[in-house]
Image (cartoon, rainbow, N blue to C red):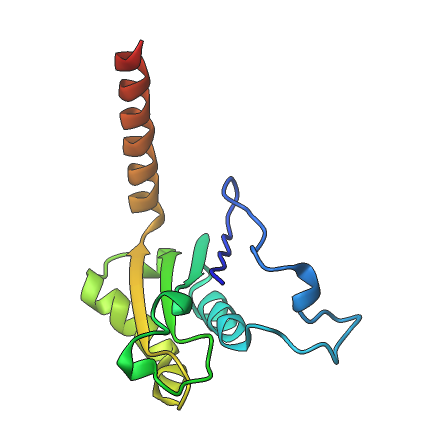
Amino acid sequence: MASKTVLGRARAKATSRPFSAMASPSSPSLASQTPLEDTIREKITAALSPSTLEIHNDSHLHAHHQAMEGSTSRETHFRLVITSAAFEAKRQPARHRLVYGLLSDEMAREGGIHALQLRTLTPEEEESRRKAAEADGEGESESAN
């Protein structure tokens, strides 16, 4: 099951998994169905204060791979989109090392993260991409008329 969480002002969306699957203060004994995803969200949020955090669990797309044979984990392959001011003045490799460092325990443990795809942006880069996408969308709709 792919799930997506987005934090931010105009981009706020709920996760795609049911609310009942998440532990809450009123039901502390309810175990999360996605503990690794929850840990990723907690660590990234605490360390980077992202304005956008998208977590895509793509594990189901890779379950047939030989490396996954015998694995019972449903949380092995993730795609993350992170927008944070903490990435200012850092090139992509440094941004990725920062995220890998935050998630090193989860990547090292048995049944943990097997693959991690990252898109790391500063708020300015995200805004530029949004404007470019809007401009592309406007040009396409005008040419269709």
